[in-house]
Length: 229
Image 1 (tube, rainbow, N blue to C red):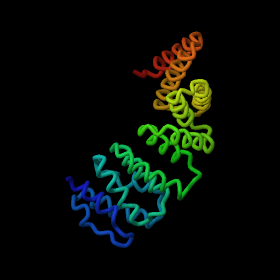
Image 2 (cartoon, rainbow, N blue to C red):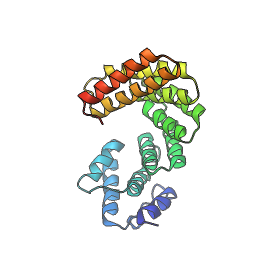
Image 3 (cartoon, helix red, strand yellow):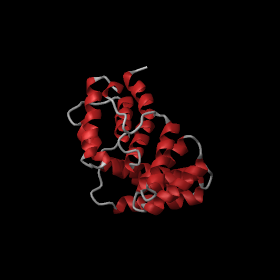
Image 4 (tube, helix red, strand yellow):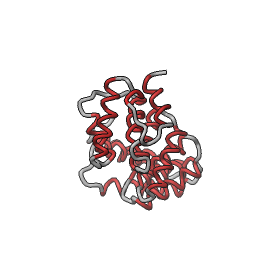
């Protein structure tokens, strides 16, 4: 068991006022925990806290990232963004049950952030819980209709459920949202290419070959113009 793994286990059982540096004796992790506390005391946004505390500290292995995020939560367990960030760290580790638990805690604290429903839906979909994932994606698209990821991921779940006609609707909505996004970056175009590929597959399933060919053409065009492999 690594130091970071032990830290995760101990941090999960800690009380808010019981933080000690002995939990993570590695110098880098101990320094990060201390920086987390200092920044949280100054009421920084949780994501800013992580960015600032990791500054100059080198890259962390996923377990250390979980430990650091949990360390921050010992000072504010009612921080929705903090719970969400721990969920993200667990998801990076592939610990889906723990990620789901944290996403659900985050949503209980703040029901108005589409990204939380989106990521909960992603974790549920990976576990094959498609009906629950569908509900999460529907809520994500309601809260953030301009986020193409929610529409695309909902389309994927619908396709997996055999609801191809509905999946086509949401793939098209994802494309519309992506094309309307200002200052799109490489990742946005990469996601757009994937959505066109998903839409192509759905059209082929429905026997709509002309539409499928157009999606194929669009995918190649996006990949060529943005040097996407």
